[in-house]
Figure 1 (cartoon, helix red, strand yellow):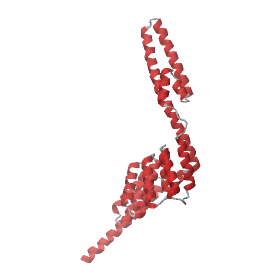
Figure 2 (cartoon, rainbow, N blue to C red; figure 1 turned 45 degrees about the vertical axis):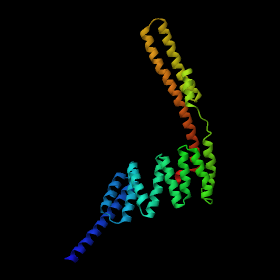
Figure 3 (cartoon, rainbow, N blue to C red; figure 1 turned 180 degrees about the vertical axis):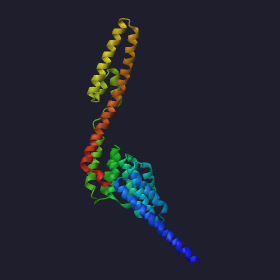
Figure 4 (cartoon, rainbow, N blue to C red; figure 1 turned 90 degrees about the horizontal axis):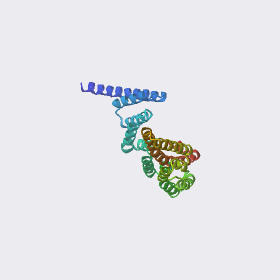
Length: 280
């Protein structure tokens, strides 16, 4: 009887392992086809029947990729975080680098920089430190980016990324001296003379339109007021108030857009030249 039960247990374990493998293979197939919801379901089902730790961790890693492709960034990063902290050494290393890369892709630049720096420290990896610098650069944190790129010369003296890092350190410092407009100044200028703040921020069309709208509305208001058309005058006065304060906001916003555009152009030029996305 005891031998029979032992044999039955072995059969059940083998059957569950075979089922998990089948579900995993099916999930792999669906993932390759781009059916990410189906892959998520298959990997989750395989996890219920898989008993081996290494196999479970591999399944969780694949599940994280399927979640990410299925636009579920939160669940993907939760799984990768878990594997980076609790997984076996091989999967832990892979999960942490992948986690940092996903943070970078999704615009979580500070998180990406911290993960890449931690990874570089743990595994003595030059590309991770290089990407940490890029994370700060994409966040327009020019000082930190410049320091990290400069540090690569000492931390990784024979790094393949050393020359690029030296040049990027100088480029990061240039980012602090890009042409910029003062949003507060643009707002005040638009309040003194409608449209002038937008013109200062090089939003020429918006500035001209703002000036003409305000001039026309003020003219119509004064004309109505002088001819004692009080109701019409109040309408034009209300419209002018909206144009006036809207123009002041527009001047402030135009300056901010100008500054963002300058930073974006600078970054896009560097990305075009160095193509960091190939590393993650």
